Amino acid sequence: MDTYNPSLAPRFSQLLAQREAELRAMLRVAGNLGGQEEDATLNEVVDFKDVATEQALSTISEAKAEYAAHELEQVLAALSRLKDINHGNALDFGRCLDCGEAIDLRRLTALPATPYCTACQTIHEQARPQALRF
Figure 1 (tube, rainbow, N blue to C red):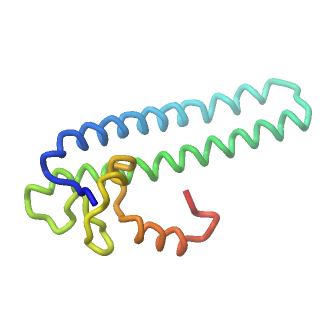
Figure 2 (figure 1 turned 30 degrees about the vertical axis):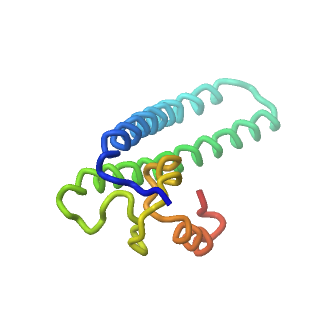
């Protein structure tokens, strides 16, 4: 299994910074659209199907924003671990926060902000109630 090494820090720093910017932009857009959609529908005459569709889309938008906020927290934590790696911090980037084992480089490349190895992630997903899963 290939694992993270400090020579990969610039690459992961760039990936995480790029994802941070994307998530912040998504959250800005979500915040700006929230009030505008409600104001537009107050002045229109719509049928119940339109109202239901608007409410469903609003719920989906809220869920996307909530997921983006959660992912942003993970990205910021990963950036912090990446910066702390040179200080001998026990929470080194590329190591699982639960078991301390190295995270497979393929997983880390696909999900640079991941705090857990595959085995520990599975445990977290099984322990979390279905309604709270992202």
